[in-house]
Length: 336
Ligand code: P6P
Image 1: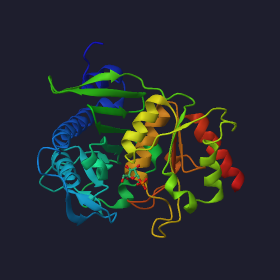
Image 2 (image 1 turned 90 degrees about the vertical axis):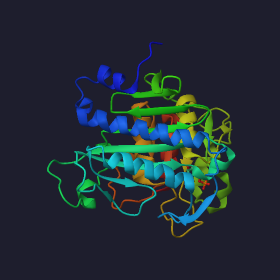
Image 3 (image 1 turned 60 degrees about the vertical axis):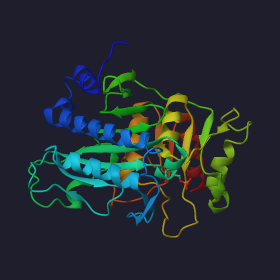
Image 4 (image 1 turned 180 degrees about the vertical axis):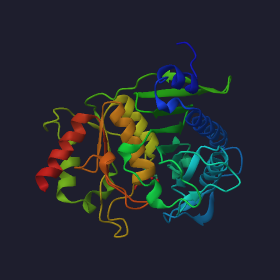
């Protein structure tokens, strides 16, 4: 395959697309540079003493590993001076991140999870950076308020993730299909490796943390139970694959087919809508999976249609091949 970089691909395939503007290209370049820096430190995490917990906790109340903080600071530092954002938001930061007056502002709003799955760092499990990009109405100046930038997922102009595994892979969409690029350290570029990814219409994998079975309602137990019944309407035996790193689980199911589920469970009354975040996890992955021919719901409703009310809003997530997500939706709809 001819070596095509991300930016070449963007300009080559989306010439007519307003996404190939100078601002957007610069935004993507800064994200790519951030990922190269993060990936370098993730890959050597076992060698340099940057493992272990800082003892700090993030806005989600989770212990923050130093690599989480490092990844977050790399992205904030690089993106705030790129001159393409009016504001940004991070899974690690409670409020909107304003762009200092020292730097020019731009027309995009960036939301990211700097290092999702970080609790797996010490076990060398693949983890990832997830990003979601919105265009905002012109003329935003001064302090940006939440109502200026909060939009439903269907308004995203781009979304993607970097997965730091056996190699670092970037997967993204700007609404013209889903494309994967693998980082080639010998040239220092992400090169096209997975053009026009399509998720199989039905898979053989289901991904969910079954330890929560007793905290699920009846509809959820019926939905998950369907994958353990070879005689179900899905008509095949499934394999359970769950690594506890959303980007790794999602990426595998995107390529092989199947469904990832994080339902509401009743363990923690503080999380009545489940654990995963709408803006920096569900929305970007939902945009990608729909562009790849799949589906993403909260059990019933299309993820991309959910009107966000707050920055760190959570949502149940059922995402992957259409056959499985559609069957789950039927079960929840019948439950009423
Ligand atoms: P559980 C990692 O902390 C994360 O946010 C996702 O990457 C992952 O899919 C999920 O949580 C795992 O959660 O409750 O199964 O440990």
